[in-house]
Length: 538
Image (cartoon, rainbow, N blue to C red; front, top):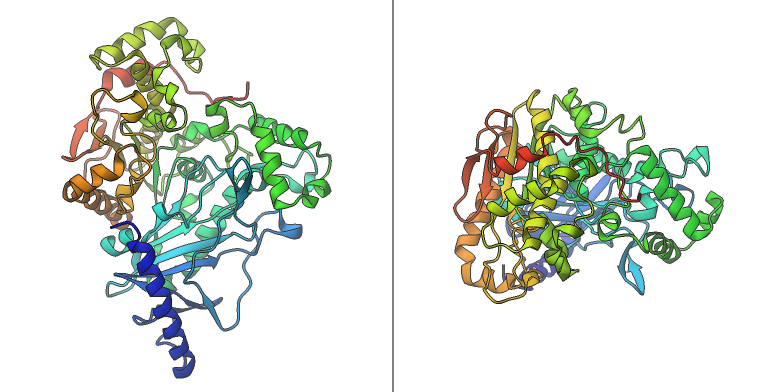
């Protein structure tokens, strides 16, 4: 889609929706409860009526509350049910996301942020598959309203209902305060509780928007995928969703209890906080400044995983892969995947990342230290002509993302057919440019293809590449949308399932293929490493 067209279409849709709402107020209620008016996208839920905006092939409903505002006495409490409303709830304009750091000078978002954005396919019939998206952002930034997560194209092309979720971030969503006041035990997983509340809301209300509440798929990327891993390790996740897609989010990054307590201690110490009352007295801006202070001095990797879900023994009973191996998700269809060059993402912020020598690879597992050079040599032999820094990043991608993800897939495959993909497409390299201008299939790069917006404006030469290759890239996007929505409908995305014996993997590139055990010699180098829960604060 051309730049600006989506925003223009949404403004036009909002005007049409207002006119339709005015006509509805004159003519009375729409048709049967739960049926979306094709003219005005007006639906009736058990909480009240909701007015959306028509778009090409969809109705969008933006900023619909799934929980009560987490403000005042609810600030560090689990989410409470939303209150019904009178009249018609206008849902034609995106609402702010949850509070988050945006610049060194300040943050954005509002604390009254527990909303969902819904894009409903206007294809005939109901009982459409439902796809609930949990955004990434290191659990400190991001919003369902981000333009890259606009679900209109995915919903329209896939004949689905797409739901984006806003959930509490940073200090407000992921700080365990039980040590400060026992009444707040479990607050370190409030972001996860928000997601659970949103999924429960979807199960209860999505039929009003044309969706099938028994056909819900949760999908997420990065921090959102890590939350999905935590949910899969919980008690009977099938009560919330039937299927799950985790994109670039290894389950080993779900925190331990000790880690969560260390994060809380760092936060409270940074602000000299000794009581819940002190925390409650802080303004939103002061909370964000406290959060920033707590993260000052952390390495890039420690900062990226500082906040997030943790193993509390109840909501998340134990380590993710152990729980999945024991059958916690035996009734859930699972698809997982990673991108070929995940860590290239960080070079957009710190170009030196791609030039790190082997000696600077400090997060390499100590138990494998004797094999470090040997492993490097194997990776280097598979990448003739690559720089030392590129080879180190390939190893780091496998340590942080690919191999742990395959461990989860293997654990789940004992209980249910499980599917694995790898996203390999990237902006073509240009000889002579600095390494940070020649990025591979980095973290997050699959998202513009899954959502169908092909917005690569932040990737070096991304917009020009799309302009020059739109037909081919559109075909790749359509193939991926077809796979994601096929999985949402049936639990089968269109390629063989993954097993330890075959390791069938869908490779996403301009010519998608299925490969058995890609980069197997590299994966096998990690066989003796158990991937314990990492402690990046040590």
